[in-house]
Length: 229
Image (cartoon, rainbow, N blue to C red; front, side):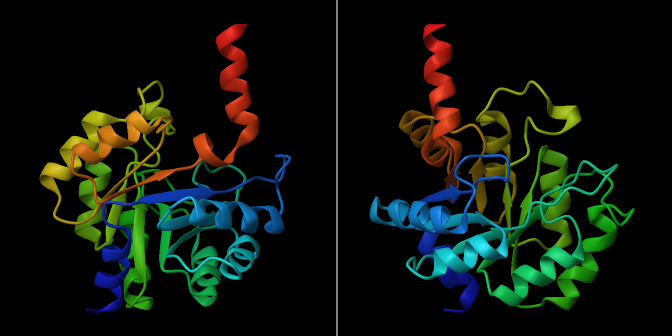
């Protein structure tokens, strides 16, 4: 079994927990994200999605699970912020994450190119690296598959200008991707309850990522407050 098969085998039918906190959030700290990932592992998670080399490095100290690595970085004038340029890919590659996830929407990237223009060069440069395409539509998922991504996620459905208002999790998109694409499909985005999780697995996804509902207490609290206000 090669590395690719091994990583996908480890996460098949299991839960990946996203452990992220942005600078403006109270839990922003590599130490805290390391503890969060360790708690997720003890709870039964089979993979971690994490943002930044600092957090990933800390997580690796106590967690021996496949890591989907991203670097969120804003470039002025561009909407793409999940691993937006080759610079972020290089940092993640050098850190040795199992899967690098990046925005694979049709939007223009900070280098002025589309994913279709830039990914063939990325694929060629990092031949043995696994790449996950964070998509928002079915057409983007098809394009990502054609470009040579190893797996495709529904991460950005509802978060691009042209998918705003989509009900999440995007069951219709997940179902279509599972039926029509022959690579692992990762459900991500808006999975708030165990019932949501069960639902996406019943659609046949390879694995699913849950973040906010597990690892962002501020957002969880807001949901509870909105129920009584």
